[in-house]
Amino acid sequence: MRKSFWAIPALFLALAGCAGTTSRKPPIEIWPDMDRQPKVKPQTQAGQRPVPGVVAVGRLSEDDAFRTGQEKGMYVGKNPLPITMQTLGRGQERYNIYCAPCHDQTGSGHGIVSLRSSWLPTNLLEPRVRNMTDGELYTVISQGRRSMPAYRFQIPEADRWAIVAYLRALHRATDARIEDVPAELRGELR
Image (tube, rainbow, N blue to C red; front, top):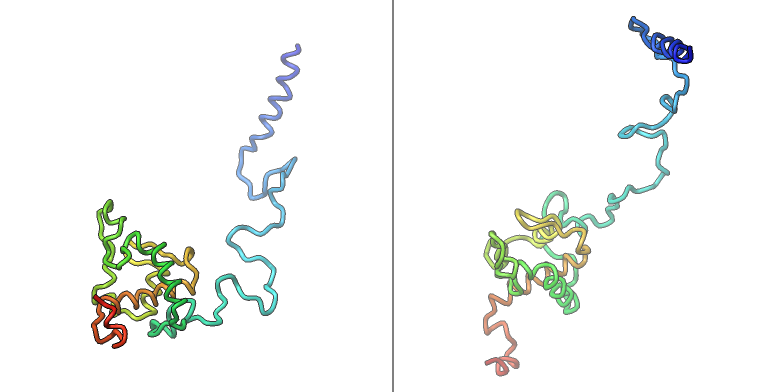
């Protein structure tokens, strides 16, 4: 008797769930569990409008050429930083931290990374690199090229330009002639 008492409601619920036909009406929900609440779905536009004058993250372009190394679609030809001993010192310091492990302190491309890797980093003293504009060198540091990673997030913009200035000093140092040294200092050279 007791088993048949529970069997009758169970059978009734099972049969109630089987309608036997299809319906365009949604099923009856005893507990809706927030299935049809008003909400914003992912990847859809919210009803909020931005405050007038707000600038989206990463879209402030007071000096776009300084930030990107490009102006009107062309690479910047000249470094926008004033080339001072402080700028060159900062560039050398940042170069030795971020660039020298692959490119060596002289820019030859024979840094400590090349001892264990299957690829050789670019020789920064070759004519192809020397002929790049300052903006193109800045862009390569920022975005990377081939197997070189991007350093946009690790190196601030001013430091990237300082590295470009230091690279130009390396280029000039490898092409140095005795005429480049002032006459009063030539006697101090060996």
